[in-house]
Amino acid sequence: MDIALQLIGAVSYLLNKIFLATAEGSRNKKWRVLGWLVYLIGAPAWIIIMLKQRNWMAAAIQIGGIPTMVLGLYVSLRGYNQSIYVLNKIARKLIYILTGAGAVHSIHYFGGITAITQVLEIIVIVGFLSGSYLLAKKNKTGWIWFAVMNAGMSILMLIQNKYILAGQQIISLGVVIIGIIRAK
Image 1 (cartoon, rainbow, N blue to C red):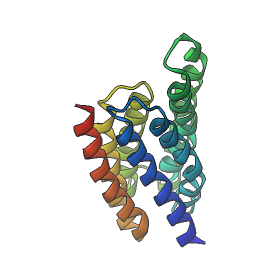
Image 2 (cartoon, helix red, strand yellow):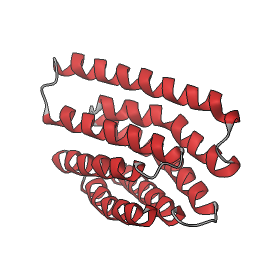
Image 3 (tube, rainbow, N blue to C red):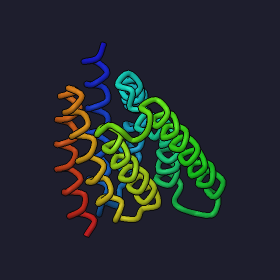
Image 4 (cartoon, rainbow, N blue to C red):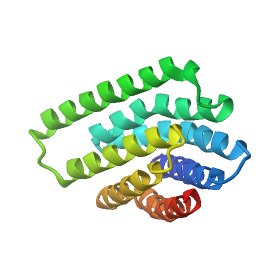
């Protein structure tokens, strides 16, 4: 089961980065739409793995990030306009609430910030939140934050012997670099 979850999570998140990088500079909205859709497909696998590894903050951010992905999908389909104000507000509040809950639970569970995995989760959270939010709003600096996220997550997955996911994160880092170049 663990291998299947890793494969589903790895393939969907790698395709997410490939499609979003392909969308940069393209007038065809299908790449951005596909990027957000495959992310949503892979999210449950990542959430399960994070919970099994006791990566409470990373699991919380994955759950909380789903509305941001929906926001990105909506913007890709309909464009960025005032009608997404409510969805944008919901996405922000859910991310803050769930990230806070994950952090509190992690601190309680581990008795503080006592593990390197927690520090890596914080790096992942900052990269994920910043990157997803900025890219959902078509702000190209989101790519830099995704690079931070991928670097932190690859180290976390290596430490926890999730080699498929670690490899996917390293490959994703390469795709993110392509996204940065295309965005310029």
